[in-house]
Each structure stands twice: as structure tokens, then as C-alpha cells.
Length: 164
Image (tube, rainbow, N blue to C red; front, top):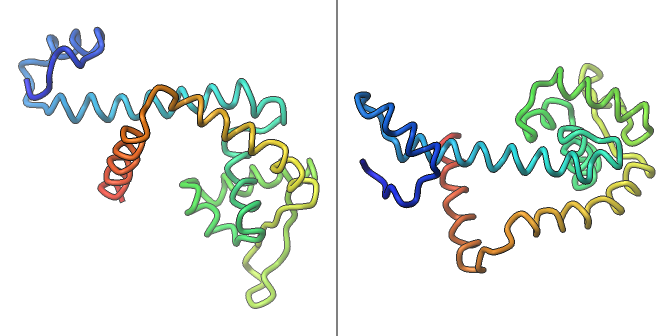
């Protein structure tokens, strides 16, 4: 075994026992599995406890957040930034446009391109929502020292760089 068994969750120990005949890197499998589980729990918790109060999905919030920061973005750039397809951007922006949170305009230099922007109402939602969202983020990492937070951030950025 290439990681310490005392650091494993009970279900990971069971998996390890079942997979000992396979040539796998259990540490890599366990780390990736835990990154995924943490991300999923964060998303589900935020959607259930906060975003639902604003009738927003995680993806809807992410789109609105990007536009809150950048004001206007072309659909393809927004899709790349969010890690979703242009079709997803189209679908989510339709929903947010019906709620008067985002607006569309044609790019004046290339009429084939659609740009999305945040409305005044969308800006108001984000100004109310974002401090609460950030508090949720604070709650997610409570118990980690400042040094642990810095180390985790550095390590996660390295993982993201490896993926890219």
C-alpha cells in the first residue's frame, strides 16, 4: 500500500482489500474520489441551503457570478470559463433571461456571436446572495488552519493544472 491505512475512510479500506490484486495507485484513486465527493457535497449543500432560496441552480449561479464580475461575456468564452457546453449556456441563460437576471445582445463586430450581460436585477441578486454564498464557503473550510488552507489551495491548483 502506498498511503497510510489510518488515513483512510472505512469504505476506502474495504475497497483496498477488494482491489489488492489489481495494479492500481490507490492513493491517486482515493485522492480523486475525495476531491469529487467534497465538490459534490459542497454543490449539493449550497444548492439546497442557499441557492434554492433564489431559485438558482449551481450552474445558474456560476453563470450569473461570471457576469457579475465581467458584466458582458460572449457565450463561448462563458462556456469555457464555466467548463460547460455552449448548449448549456444557452439553456441556462434562457432561464435567467426569463427571470430578468441576464440579457443578450449581438456582438456588433460579428453578428453571429451572442454576448450575455447581467441586468440591474441580476446585480441586486448577486449583491444580496454573494456574501451569504461566501459565508457558506467559510463554513465548508472551518477547522482548517490558515496554513492548511494555503497548502490545500496550492495543492488543488496543482491538481487543476495537471488536468488542464
